[in-house]
Length: 354
Image (cartoon, rainbow, N blue to C red; front, side, top):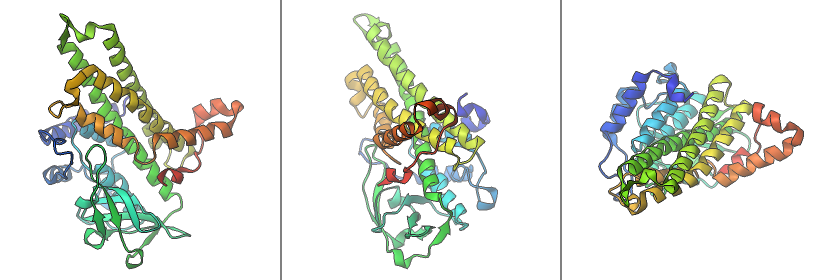
């Protein structure tokens, strides 16, 4: 069962209508994605910018099934919105540290020891940044006004802001968070990117089906050619596999907890499945569409570029694969079935971010 079927269909319809109403005519023509203040205001008014925060921390108290629907709606409409960074990461970190969350847009990141951290999402647009750092003994969090950090703009393949942030560690007041917070931060970010990838790939499959059904070649619809059928079928199959793995991970999150070994394994599997699916989906989709799929005028690039960027964030596909392989090898032949059915802790998660 898809995660989106477990929440109110009216809520899903509302999410989809909000993003559809704020879809830009050609967001990628300039190669850069800008923060949409009007969209953010609407999301705030309907309670979607702090969807998962507790009531006591100014949130709506929603679960990850609702998160899945929200991220699918945004990715499916090709509308970039930093709800992952603001709610699932920054808001969660502040609540974990028992720090208040005042008005303003936030982004969060795992800070490097040097104080300079690259590829921070949406940093140039943030009112506050929420870094998570290790001082050698403890994990610490801070809520820092944007005017106290230096931001060097950059972007990912999809044109979304991925900036370099530099801050003076000694000038910041830090608050401790429990051990394991960094690992959970990584897992939350990884699962969120998987859900975004799945939302975009679902739409890519729809675009492929629409294209082959409406276009003709040699007097026949493209959908009648066996080679084209195989391309579309493989695209749909890979997208469905990634969605199944993502839904399984969301289900584990809701049934157990983030520090449960089954959740850790489920997220790792979802990240690997989605990452590999992207290769097939993007390649096949562009083969199906031909030259028109490479133009700014066509919608396809709105989805293929972001999924290629998202699959490498919060750990590359290769690194997640190596961790899963290491886990399987350590489990051994006799433990293979229990690894699949019960999962296991995946060691070395923070190595993914190095």
